[in-house]
Amino acid sequence: MGYDNVEFDRESVFLVTGGAGFIGSNLCEVLLNKGYRVRCLDDLSNGKQANVDLFIENPNYTFIKGDIRDLDTCLDACDGVDYVLHQAAWGSVPRSIEMPLLYEEINIKGTLNMMESARQKGVKKFVYASSSSVYGDEPNLPKQEGREGNLLSPYAVTKKVDEVYGQIYSRLYDLDTYGLRYFNVFGKRQDPNGAYAAVIPKLIKQLLDDERPTIHGDGKQSRDFTYIENVIEANLKACKASSEFAGEAFNIAYGGREYLIDVYNSLCKALNKDIQPIFGPDRKGDIKHSNADVGKAREKLNYDPSWSFERGIQAVIEWYKENL
Image (tube, rainbow, N blue to C red):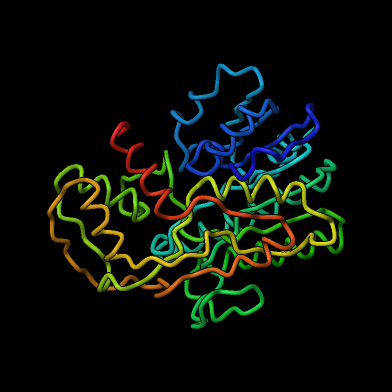
C-alpha cells in the first residue's frame, strides 16, 4: 500500500471525526492495524453503528458519540490528541440544495469548532476533507489548485469556507491544517442505499438486485473516481507534511477520467448483467466533468496513488458481492 511505510510515534493518538462513516471507518481500521490509538467522534446521523462495532473490542479504539456542532464535545474529543483527521460532514450536492441551513451548521460551524478545539488542545496536524466541488463551473481539465470557478451548490460553499478557515488557522494561530479535495471516492462500506447514495455503490446494488438504474443526464459526464486506499494514503501523508505547506488544499484523486456510461457498462459486464439504464434529467449543481491534476500533492505531500480505477472497481465489486 502507499501508506505502509508511513509511521508515527508509537504513542500517537488520532482523532477521526465521522469515524463511523465510509471514509472515517476505513481510516480507523488502517490506524488500528498499525497499532495506534484511535478515537472516533460521530453522532451516527450519517455514520453507522455497525462501523463502530467492527472495532469496539480493540483496546486502542474509543468511540465518542457526539455532535461537532457542540464545542465542548469537540474540546473533550481533542484533549490529548496528536492528529485530527476531520471527515465529519454532510455530503451530497442535491441534499445541500434542499437543506442549505443544515449544511452551514454542520460543515462550516462544525469544522470551525474542530479547528478551534484542535488549536486550544495543541494538536500537531489537522487534516480535513474538502471536495472537488470547490472547482464549480471552471471548465478546464485537469482541475488544478488555484484555478477555481463559481461555486454551484451550498455543499461546495461549505467546503470552500472550510478551506479559507484552514488558511486562517494556519496563518494566525499556527495550527497546521491541510485540506484534501477528494474526487469521487469509492470503496468498501460505502452506503448504497437512499436517495443521496454515491453512484458506484448504488449502481452495484441495483444491478445485483436486477433493478433498472437511473443515470442522471446522458451518461457522458466524467469523473476522477478515486479508490479509498488512495484517500487513506493522502490522510496519513498529510500528517507527516512540512509545516511550510500548512493552510493549503490539495487534489486527492488517481488522476484518471471515467465516463459514467462506461463505468455502468463495465459494472454490467463484471456482474454478468444485461440491464439497460434509464436516463433521467441532469441534477442541479452537478459538475459535468471532473479530472484532477495531483501534481501538487505529489510534490508537497509525497502522495503517490497506487490504486487505479480498474484495480479499485474490481476490489469493490468483490466486497459488495460478499457483503450485500
